[in-house]
Length: 458
Image 1: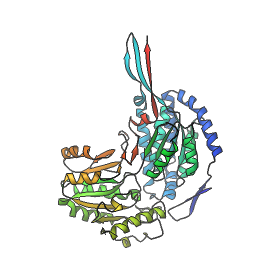
Image 2: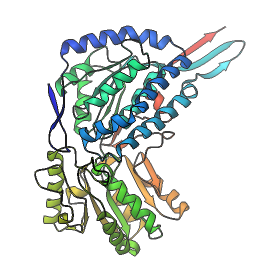
Image 3: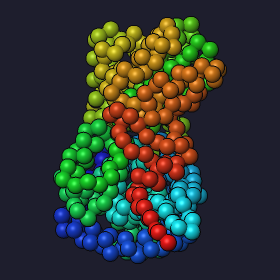
Image 4: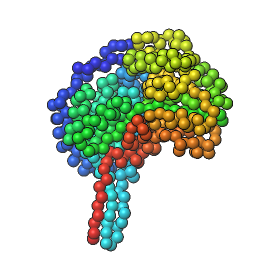
């Protein structure tokens, strides 16, 4: 049994039975049998099943919100938003499935018919994290099912009840046995699962180290593997930016979910002409956060997922200060922030540079560094000075300037005047150590299918 320790109060919230190698074997055998029947259904039939599956999750929003808060610490006032976001993405993918998967006809003449189709991979392993447990997993699960794949979901032991909710929804939607299954596995058994010849594709969301482990587990076979990994996402605030909009958005982008987001804002570069005003306003708004028990309605900043995670961020902050950085938010303003607990106040650091880990290594916590820059060129150079490249944002009232700068930024998504958001109509992807592959949009269906061509001479 694996205990899930709640960051809310340090208690054991639930215990989950670890599945065995025998369970893996039986699960994959069942999935193999289920695949041919599921893939043979019409798109309309699969859409009906998937819609019922999605609605079953939505119907339990209130219960799920409470479970999420206890499992990973996000304030209860914010957790229902995850299910509304889940619904938005899922419903969009249902709406575009037929168009995304329609055959590409090259020729249909008296002499020839030539075309290419997208066909399902087969049994897809989905490995999902705890920080946005529905929003990360839905990106793979829904298009994969719509395309005709069957799913084996392995979720984080920090949020095992998410997997159980999915399993319950699949049963309620009337899925045939084996179409959607869950396994609770440790790292070693997860490697056994995905390296098994019966797994035809993998979708993983997590750390860079986790992505490398997944990749190493697949060294002896050739299957598609999508990796959505870490980020050190940057923002550039130009001199002509809307001060109020940029401050409000970037404070939220840095501290929502206690900064535990792969696309959260971790570093900000501000033009010298606006720097002082921006920093003063940013600090003032940060000080308005209320850190505390996430079950309280007035709390808008909860604990980090674990004390070890909070200690990692504390260490980054301490090392930066030792190297000359200055913290502008006094931790004593937040009574709940205490050493030896997952409760950590938001931190705003200035006088930072790229010799400091807090500006180069993923923090995944409530800390942001702000640097002054003299030009667009300097800002872009610093934004690109990273081994990550998930998202970046440019804050300006000059659309033409943003359009010239954006292609120079090394990131999977470049925003103007927004951040920390996934548009289901746009491809979600990263460069460098932020991973490979695509989810969301029409292109997301390509990763859970393979191409098959037909060439008929009449």
